[in-house]
Image 1 (cartoon, one colour):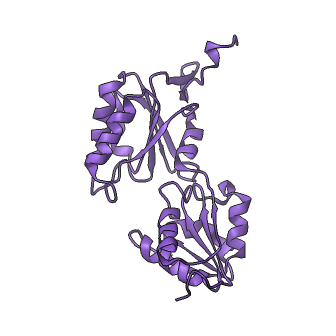
Image 2 (cartoon, one colour):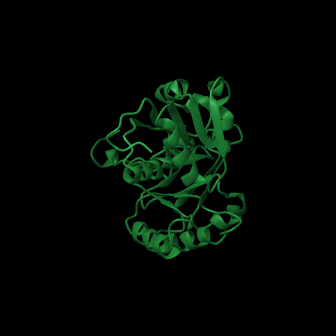
Image 3 (cartoon, one colour):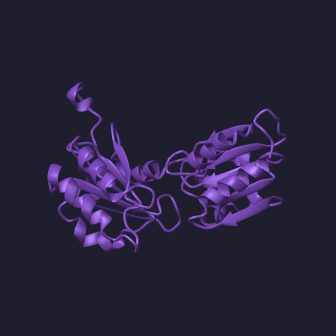
Length: 261
């Protein structure tokens, strides 16, 4: 294995793909994939890339193989141009941290670029109007890498702030109760009328978007799964209507306090 003093002929791009469809990828992400000789990623994220992968060595793997995928990408990048892809933004619950940790541990002197992508929070918010206009928090309910008691403490603390909270990985078959825990903690600090936005597969072809309230969220709990982002509004958030139609959620930025409009 080369030491950190040795130079390499390869490079490594850690690429955020955004929601998945090519329309929402950045030009820089496409260029990084175009340059790559090898492209590695979870099969779910590789499938929509289609023609971008023509003529490349594609290494597909499944959930739970992130460490193996990161190490393989680093080994290939010692002598090849490599892209390892991640849904959303690679630095937000994505592949960037594990790749950088292994690079640091191995003292591998490989040129690295992290290419940002649209996060699930951004994608979901865009379908709901403007629920994240100011400060907000993002909490993952997955306890695979973070103990549930730590998640619970973070949720309880952030809901006291009265800011919108985006819940990632809200519910799976293996842990159906974490979302109920989050809702119960939100209700300690927020009114039942607090709007809640539920966006499944944001900015994808089979997207579904719903708006409810914290007091009535149980009525649509069955529609929530791992492909869903749940946005619980803050103390100032309100349902956005046009006439009698619910369009989404607005969290005022504060302009109404300073300007007349």
